Length: 247
Image (cartoon, rainbow, N blue to C red; front, top):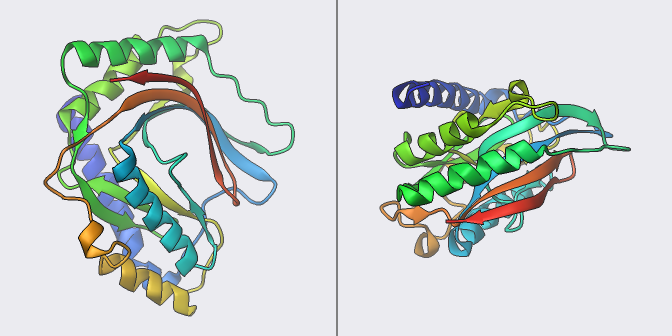
C-alpha cells in the first residue's frame, strides 16, 4: 500500500465515522464492545507520546465518561496510545483468557524502530481534532497523512518473518493515525440529557479549558515504540507493556 492509498483509505474511514457521529442526536450512543463476560484481546504495536500531551487527552477521556455517567471506557495516562498494528485480535471469554505474543512481532518492531531512528524519521504529529461516532471518541492529527507514521506501519509489516508461531495473516495494520480517547460501554438513548451534553461539549470543544489546549501547530514527537497486549471489556481497557524501544 502506498502513502497515497493509506491517506485515501484513512479519509474514507474518517468520513464514515463522522457520518455515524451525525446520527448520535437521533439514534444515541451504541456500544460495540463485546457483551459482559467477554472481551476483545490482542497483541499490540503502539506509540507513546510525552506525558504533557497524554495527560490532556486522558483528562478529556475522564470528562467524557463523567458526562455519560460512567458509560464510557476511560483511556488514562497508563494506557493512552496510538496503534500501529495489532496481532491475533479476537473476541473471547474473560475467564481463562490466555494471550501469547510471538517473538517475531517483537523482533519486527525493534527492527522498524532502529530503521526509523537511523533515518531520522520518528513520527511527529500535531494533534487537535476530536471526532466521534456512536461508539467512540477519537483524536486525529490536524493534518492526517503523516509519511513517518505510514513508513513505521509498513516497516513493522515488512519486517515480520513468518514462522510456526508468527502468522502474518494475524497481523493487522492500523487504518489511520488516531488516538482512541473513549469507547462507549453502554447504549445511551438519544432522549437522555447526557447525550445532548456530550454533543454540545465535543462539538463546542468544551472538554478542554482554552488555556491548557495543545498548540495545534506544535509537532509532538513520539517517545517510544512498544509491544504489549491489550484486553478491552465493558469496564476498562487494560494495556500490558512487554517491550519498549525508545526513539
